[in-house]
Image 1 (cartoon, one colour):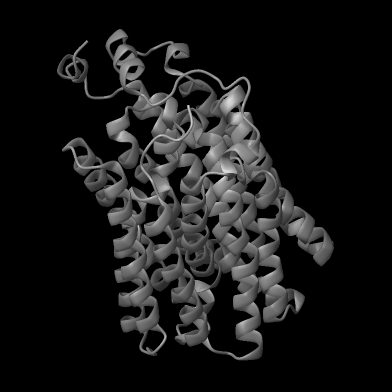
Image 2: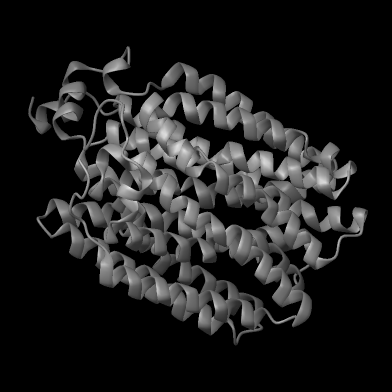
Length: 427
């Protein structure tokens, strides 16, 4: 079946339903992750938490998130992304719902609830990558990963806008109850619409099945995955690990501390925090999808995959780092937010760089590779978020926060340029 004939079968393909549901899983993942960044402001007043304690609360989530990455990827590659992601969403939704009761039980209980939530969310991206590499053709990888990743800024924006409304009209507790319920609703739809592989889907057309079978990077389960050291000996894997780590340093610092920066650092009233803080995330949402399409088009036109990955990553990290350094010297609200938005425009190019590189170098092991790199990329959620809290506690300098973040970003750009590859490394 030719590509033209396949696309004449109708606009909406079964694989579009798969990535749409993955997008909503990522969306729910981030509304549940980000809501506490806003809710912690009234929570801190109720419970008397200082800035350092708030940093530990925000970062404790990442302890659970760190522990389950590799196992989540291996389980998804072996048993299927549908099962593993579905279970993960139910687990994190439960811990989201019980967060208010955990807070009443004391800091230790709250830490445990946040860690449990992290365990559930840890399987999200490894499971999605395992599904994408089996459901989508090679020349749709970057745009598909971009669409899924755009659930991050959209979920973040939703949480930044809606959480203050819920807190103001009901209470901060209801931000956790209502958002947790959304995950349960998603799970029901997930069971109806998604399968692990195209061949298992009851409604897929013969034309689409043939097209995916001929063009997808991988198919079937991985019965006997090689040991982790087999992957960790490879320089191309380390290029993604370092780039992913540096990318997420910026991501997690901004996710966790942007509302407080807007509130305290720029002097914006609490009621307006969500509206101001959402602007960089809205920018990121649109630019992710544009960057993913550009990367796919360059590869489809015949450009070398390695060159495309390195070019996109250099634009992403280089431009972002420059914007972060400029923000360090700015005190005006709109100038700071404009620079953050510009940084997000540049940073979005990374979706055509390291973000999709796992599927180039090891398509059948994409879930496992994502688990490996996302393990390293979770460390900034613990270290970066906590270090930011300590910087603010002991120096009060937002400029230093942005300077440190820019330095990490530039290091990631240089390392990726030297060691990255777009060639398949693992069968």
